[in-house]
Amino acid sequence: MPKPIKFTYEKKEPFRDAFFFIVVCEGKSREPDYFRFFDGLSSRVKIVAVESGTGSAPRLLIENAIAKEEELDARSERDRLWFVIDTDRWRKQLHEIRQECDHHPHWHIAQSNPCFEVWLYFHAKTGLPRLQNIAQCNSWKPYLPTIIQGGFNPDFHPIAIEAAIVNSKALYVRNGYFPEPGSTQLWQLGEELLPLIKKDLDTLKVKF
Image 1 (spheres, rainbow, N blue to C red):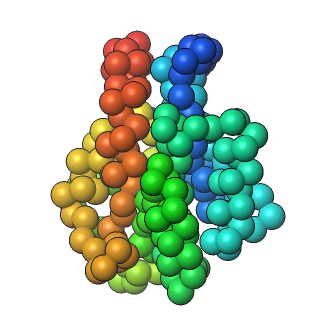
Image 2 (spheres, rainbow, N blue to C red):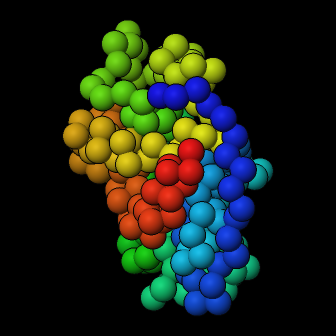
């Protein structure tokens, strides 16, 4: 991956008929900062990253989703909502979110096992890493800076989302609806988001 810089492109105002792509995050900073990179890239879609706020328990994430949709006056037939969640903390409670999604067809889940860093890893690498404890989040977090100079930079590295989709999809394995350790479902979110921003993303790459 190239040396990180901070992109300074001018954010675009969404068209009047643009729709919302809402991402409800379990984390307070890393996940929201990642998705904010794409907001304003295209006028077709307004990308809204929702921080975990007072807590990251599944019930609180559901409450955050409902509150944000009400605030934005989101419409189920047009707008989209994704939960971005980890496996390591709430394994037993995650079925609650999945049950809730059954009642909201425009709600979807992108789960990583064990954590969001799995998705970030695939922006830079193919194949699984040689980690001794691949199922432990505390193995992934210190590992990223060893393969990405300076660590993952949310002002730069999300530009490689296409590579992350291809790399993570190729190694995706699940057990029921849970991804196996070292797998992530974020490629599914990426495949839905990418067509909405690809033209503008390609333009940004050329400018760089």
